[in-house]
Length: 326
Ligand SMILES: Nc1nc2c(c(=O)[nH]1)N[C@H]1C(S)=C(S)[C@@H](COP(=O)(O)O)O[C@H]1N2
Ligand SMILES: [Mo]
Image (tube, rainbow, N blue to C red; front, side):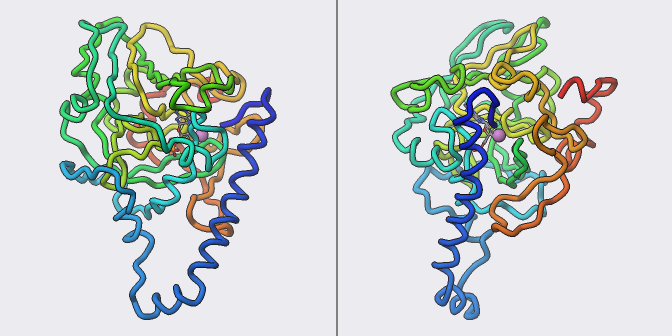
């Protein structure tokens, strides 16, 4: 994400990707030269997928989850890329900032308050949320708005389960997701980079769609801080910014929430933010994307309508002009 009125953010969104990739390529080249070639020919070096499947992060493992067919057959983005190339402005505007800057962030204990149009407002602990529904692993493409994408094995619960548990009233037409804004643990929040807290929202039917999950983990472990610990939204047919991180409040409303990016740049970012290769961002094409982790010279690939999930979600937007409702 970036916005026109803040040139520092603009710069940080464009340059770091190149710098970051170059540095990674350099590290790979340096590290995998002679030794890597020897190990590979001796069959001792596993593929990135196998390597990525057992992250040596020290984070708590999640063992009680069911694997689902969602996204089976996709090549996963290596764990290292998923957890070191991030957008999380509470921890800095550069893609490589969140990992080091969130080191001291404490995602536990954690409570989430459920309020607004519900039969009874309540506060849940993150452990309660783990128990609302059985956890599932789902492999989804995370599509980011600047033309890059990742394929991530998320662990989470269907948002629909959490919503049913929350018992919204008949007046609830939208759900608002509010992230933590703690200046003590989040250095970015001490600066007026965005209007804190970060706010996202979905229409109720989008929130209830079976594809939408509240993620609590990835790659078989609890979420790393930089990916939105302890709980973040994942909406696979929308641009990445719809996935609010480190959520502390879920509010049901009768009005469309004013989300952070719409507030920052209403002509650039819409409420819906559906992946749509036929509607360009005012300043860049949205018809192609680059898979992160494929190396500097990986070719751009064609972006699919609704990020490839059209069969499941196109009907949510029947009759809507997707140029106006971008
Ligand atoms: N609270 C909060 N949530 C956020 C953001 C943020 O800055 N703050 N960035 C969004 C954007 S622009 C993207 S692309 C995704 C990135 O998620 P990832 O780092 O896990 O890939 O998180 C989204 N959620
Ligand atoms: Mo993004």
